Length: 217
Image 1 (cartoon, one colour):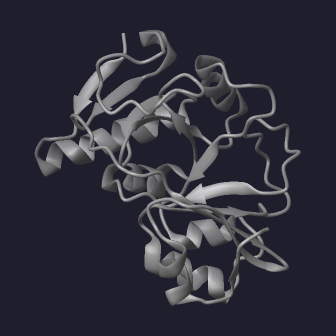
Image 2: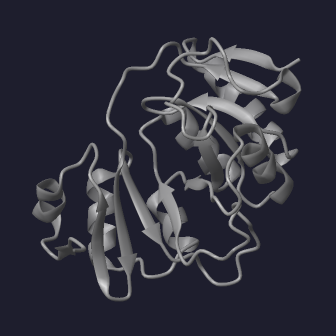
């Protein structure tokens, strides 16, 4: 049976929780943890079987890719291409936080996020959740998807997940999470930076950092 660990506890217990999370991920297991506005499934992004488990549990359509959580900008830069000066400025301003970056992965990465490596870009983010961020810093890039069936709203509490206890190793309980907007999505290519989806961060806020953000017709 999956173990439930409260994150609303003392610092020493938090360190133990991070150790358990990292160990489970390195063993190829899934964990459930809170992000800003919803609980998510997390897996080692380089463990194909674990990533496939996320898609199986969620009933994702064929070809759907998970997003990727990283712990800091250096990690993001190390697994991607086209991470230029303007992208760096935006990420330094809005990470950790609700900015998702679609960007080409580095050549030679041995992963399959669910798309059989056919997509030209991967979606990455450094979250505001301190626990998940510290886990990612210790474990490496993490595949992430909402701990809900595909197409359903994010789960803001721990009452019911679409998974059996045997599907994941730990549930890290951060209590009921607040409602909030989705992340803002931008795309970085060799041609420049493009505004993809409005969310928690407005286009004007992004352009205050770098005005060279295009809005596709």
